[in-house]
Image (cartoon, rainbow, N blue to C red; front, top):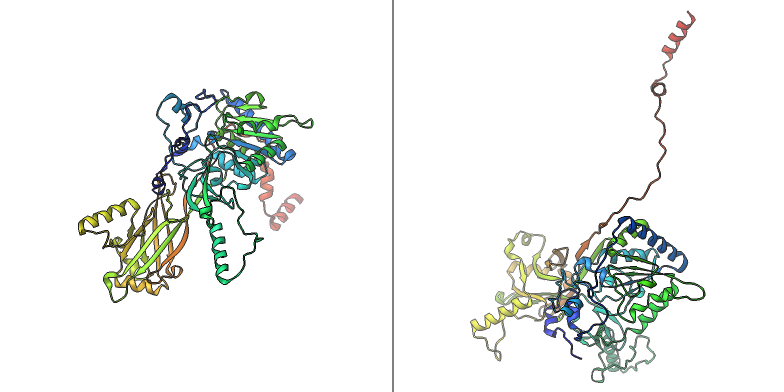
Length: 548
């Protein structure tokens, strides 16, 4: 197959393309992608009719929870267009532009830093309250998992650009960077679980212990296992190419839940790719005298419209916001946390101030050779709660990215007559896509690092453009680093990279409220009597006047 995919070097530099375009360009080339392309989009002309349909949909969702434990939702690329990711078959879709020979549509964000839409987060809340029993998605952007939807209730029929799976034990890894391949190819990484098991067996053999073949931790064999790398299982990407079969376990689960539910809701899908487009029809086919309902929310016509109980021509965010309002639910806030690894190494001796260095690197928590697409820059400073706190801004040490670091090494080699066979660049770098630098320390800083009781390394992060939080920071106590001269200490830290609150895109008519019966205002005489205080002297005077 003739496949267009990013090179390994591009992946290490984080050089994946934006949005769905990058995924599409890594697929095998096809002049004919099947189905219809560029059909017109329509919206409900009458807002009152749209509100009536949203009312009916909310009532069907309530019934599905009571009758079948919730509905099954089928999602397509249309639920991600509101955040700037192009669809495929719309008037300005990726496949539509390819067929016309037009330039590819530009994505407003990358998949690495994309924030879930209102529809993504609404489905999470509906699942939490029992309105959704299962979610079937044809999207590969990882936004359902990123929004917090549970993996066990999600079928990703076309794969996930951020997932890779072990060929032996089938453990799935979700990364914060996009895979550079498609079609279940090797990614170049290995399974931590199988590697730990192999290391454990190796240690047992050294101690003279026999391994138990019935050990539940033993990874199961796979027909794809490589004989040359039998001790360490390799990982494969989880993105389908055109000729790849759908994952059998997830396909069976999607079909099972679609048969058992009384409502299937299609959101933002043109329902043209088989066999996934036929799964919602399992709900409306007759079984034991019962027949479920199918609701399609899409701007374009679909081949399955004639089977639908109701068609809603509107944007999915507008419809789901209305559903949430009618069910008395609130779209939850989205908060994303990412992790980084910090490595630190102290070199030199107190007697040689010129060679005392503190080497620091910050990189991916998934391994130093992997990119960190949401991170643009890093700097750090050393704090001890005393004199170091009052140092000028010049004592903030910037960490260099791979491109700047490589250019610096090249310039130093040319200036100093560097010889690959005899010399090493100074300072020495670890290499890879991480941010790093080696800083010479003053006497005060060296003593602070050696004491380590109150000393901290404070890191300041500059986040990528797609992140809603452009700045972040964290502190690393030196006691946690356990610095030893010549040895690198590793820690991992979590930072908030994105946060978003969702507003209703179309509030619609306010729900009718019953008029409250107001109590009548008190009469002036009653108010005076209520305010009058009892006075015994005045009472005796009034009684004497009456006797006269």
